[in-house]
Length: 274
Image (cartoon, rainbow, N blue to C red; front, top):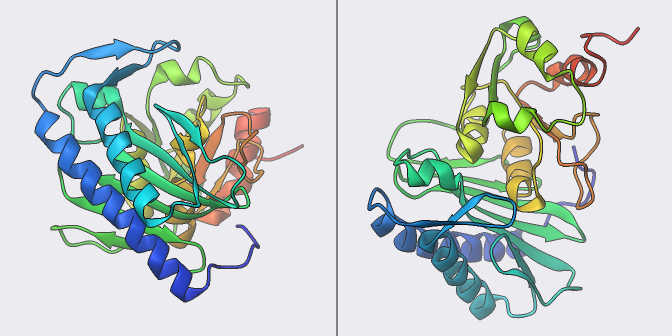
């Protein structure tokens, strides 16, 4: 958990309002393209990108530039603007483009704010189901939805009782250690798919552990305030805080008691250090 100072209430409210407005605009852009057979281009890393990704990021940037013109913005599709500012917004307009392309409503828009390089605000927005998670450092995570539910991770101190999630087996093929399968064998069960939506489910107490790799800063920055504000922890596979130069591994646990054992499994293949 970060020990940095929480945002002052007035600043936090103003920044949350800007992030919410940006998420609202992105949703208006994305929804008309959903299940409409939009074409996808392959980027240099072979990941797909669509008109929805690009247009939504432009819309988010426009809202933030209007409201907070002195802040930097880093987006997956269009890079960095106004670098060097103390505050930097980090955007993934459609996290889970493969899910979006195949009509699965488990993608999301991620909007984060970094203060001096640390995530202090994060939004996970699912524009089709109407779900939104709002995390602010120093505050409990808020969950907004047409369905009943309250943000909060669940108690699950034993790996053998834990629900484990990961976006895809292909992701694990590029893991920096060979021990992910040891975690899978110790967990109660594993489910695949979900992208950022799985992290929202962890913040609702539906999932207990998520361990992924090849993650860029726009993939994880918004998740940190959401999950930590719901009572969980987010680190790399070694249990270290995430930062811009992290190795791409991301570990999220709902019950902080899980963290030492899961880190040990991912790094050594054993639930306890020798």
